[in-house]
Image (cartoon, rainbow, N blue to C red; front, side, top):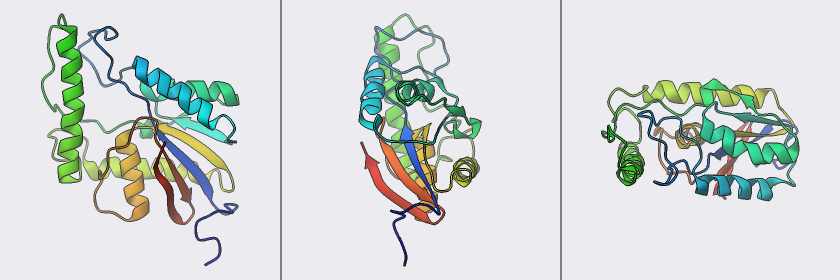
Length: 215
């Protein structure tokens, strides 16, 4: 087979998919709001974003895309500044809409308790989705297959506009799982916890995944 790993990708788009940086703020950072689905990067996350920009600053990208959520846009910002690129916002790259995983403190006076609750919530999400392989185990969530369909449609559309080019998209752990699962032909919609600011290098014309979990 000629160029099975798309090393000469003139007939394919090379798509880097990056999960956002850490977005679980410490007690000294968090601002109680009652709504925690669009948190900014934490102090750690901001450092991760800077490190990612440093690592990829010598890599040429023809375009940059991002989920509209703050944690993705803030992760993209340092690299966008270095490469003089403006992220194109793609609503369908948003993370899956989840139902209630565990109750969060209502008051917000105890910031340590709120931070711990958010950390525990994230652990629960990964545990439940990892055990079942999909998101339907979390009640009142966006249907798992519908989520996968919108993610694949969005990223395939991006790839189709950049044949022979390299692009980067900033998204979420669920988005990364859904797309990699589709490329690998897996039934599961969630099968590995993507680390913050890890990147997945995908070739899209034929289904190829390389550098899975690279950081």
